[in-house]
Length: 274
Image (cartoon, rainbow, N blue to C red):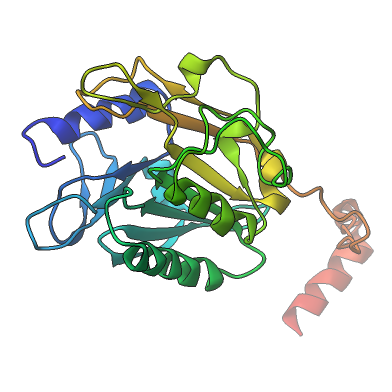
């Protein structure tokens, strides 16, 4: 994202694919900030100052989404949270970047604790969504975690980091959105190795169990290429608006036609003067 013209490339994709909110991992941008882009979209980013750029996250949104923005906060270089208004329920979106298998287990535990503390602070009435590069596969086998996935993942869970990922989210009563519907494998993988020999599903969209029915589809889009080894993961949510409460007492409507009669008009004028 710190390359010349890269922001403009990403902004063109958010418009081409009609996205309201776009979560971005590994932005390689330093500092914390919010800016308006050339075509009016908003870009928020959370980064450090060490110059490495691995754990940077950001969020891009349309002006329509910004109008619904309640607040946003950069927690650290790998965590950003934004809250939005909705007629059904307010929505919290967390952008998260998880470490690879390289860091020691204590550091991975620290990452999980930081994410858990952010999830815990969100009010119960909010819809909770976590999006990002989790660097973990979920596999096709959903035994013992049927409430978390429907068995439409890609690959096999093969290391401690991936098992840790499943354990963390199964205890939070959430659902892996990109396993919600059946897709071909080419619409599941979100990362391709530089040699193109390996393809994995390591980017995910997580939603709380109570709201899982709002997520209609989540799949990768290979055509949205900006020169990155990750593919765009698109999730579509459909919110049902609350039906009006028909038991509420209606405000009585006045019969203004009576004012056409002189005796009623005079009485009305006297009442107005009083």
